[in-house]
Image (cartoon, rainbow over all chains, first blue to last red):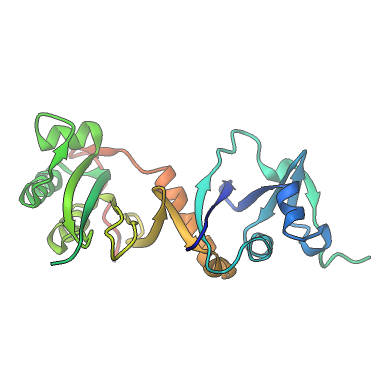
Length: 93
Length: 151
């Protein structure tokens, strides 16, 4: 039986980010080098950009037959674009 | 006869008075079981949704589907677990003529994790998640612009 899980998203007019905690990110066995510089961080939260990084996290964290509900978090003036950068994948050393 | 389930129809968007009258007539034929108001018209204008207790296969009827699109209405048709099929939702955006069909989990759009590997699938699902979040209020009047999609 598939286990339900929830994916929380934040949106601005141009983009979407999957919001996860650092603990969830670590549980997925991922590090900053697996994520592109188009993702962001603030405190305990990471905002993983929709086009690539969110998928990296989801496929690392969950099995393929799980069902994920999509939920929208209100940005409430706290746009991830204003957070600090996160992710070094593809960045020149 | 298929398994029956509970369904909810939510209607929004800007539609003309004539289109609204036609839509109410089409909806009356489908005979919803529950609505919040003394009449179907008032229920739609104040609560913007109606309930159907037992619908075969959880399916929106073709006639009502056509009436909603002809009226230029935005709509959200959702159904519960039918036993042989899971809960889900159909969304229609009259501004673009697009339709989104998804399974749901606790009433929310849901995807198989395997499907999220495709960024286009995720982007499409998020587009409909935002449509639900910003579902337009129902506005009826002859000075509204038709919400019907350009074909």
